[in-house]
Length: 105
Image (spheres, rainbow, N blue to C red):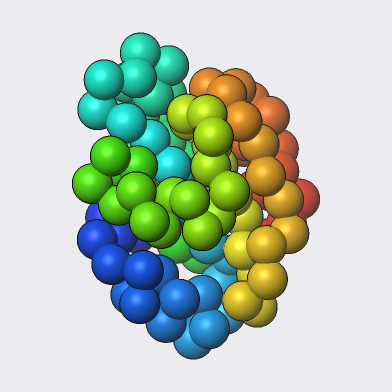
């Protein structure tokens, strides 16, 4: 399982550039109900898709990073491949997210 918490914008940018696997970035807030609801499903996906890297960004702790990624609602999931954003989904729709991961990995 590959699930990492991101704390610095530089760390995020470096991962985007060097990582060849699909990156799934979960922009969440600790107070967000839908974020809490989808968190266990995200853990399951991280186990299922071992060839995908899952990142979590707390938008309150990393406000600058969230703003630079255009985050305005939580949860928002951004998918990156080869350093480029390939998809984005807002909301706690686990099935849709799983479909996108399978399609893009």
